Length: 193
Ligand SMILES: CC(C)(COP(=O)(O)OP(=O)(O)OC[C@H]1O[C@@H](n2cnc3c(N)ncnc32)[C@H](O)[C@@H]1OP(=O)(O)O)[C@@H](O)C(=O)NCCC(=O)NCCS
Image 1 (cartoon, protein in one colour):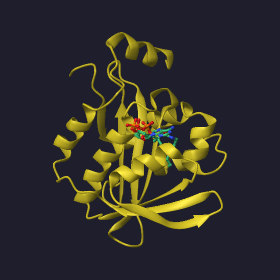
Image 2 (tube, protein in one colour):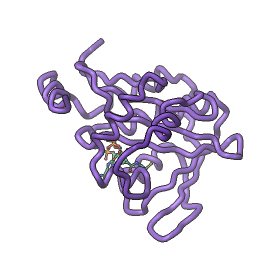
Image 3 (tube, protein in one colour):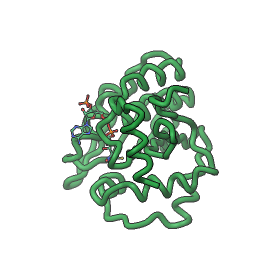
């Protein structure tokens, strides 16, 4: 595999340590934005729940940096009481933000969700979270359907580009602006141990 490529695949129970690693590389603000609260640690029960998606009602994908691989992001959907509607969540470690990882994860997740019969999505975000707002809006037409103080709920329908998950992923991997020259990405990964 070209070392310049991300690896995005289904999250497995064996990724428990990788999930903890990703959480440890989220800065305070990123954690706050993801969990909508001050979040210092993931307790074992949360890690269990987050690392055991059934890939039907609860789908999750994990992204790894170009080689040498390190876990750098995770995206998930959880089906709600409405069979066709799922709640989305995504996190990318601080050092890899703004390089297209979030977008690649979300577009791949959209393909998984479509295959599971999910036609609509919602996301709960701080209204100041410009990155997440931009990302969710790229998934398809959406609007604000709820608001509570600084927190809003965005709901929408996927912009369908076909169900070819693999093709879509490859296409979006190519857009990853990490554009890591091998040296640059190795340095970043090594720095995380
Ligand atoms: C939101 C988050 C997942 C985005 O991931 P990312 O890998 O940085 O996003 P991408 O690089 O794929 O960016 C996609 C688009 O989002 C927008 N964007 C991303 N981060 C942004 C920021 N900080 N400010 C403004 N726009 C931003 C940009 O429009 C970008 O496209 P562009 O580079 O062509 O302009 C990441 O910032 C994160 O993990 N944040 C903390 C957790 C969180 O907020 N999760 C969402 C709530 S569940």
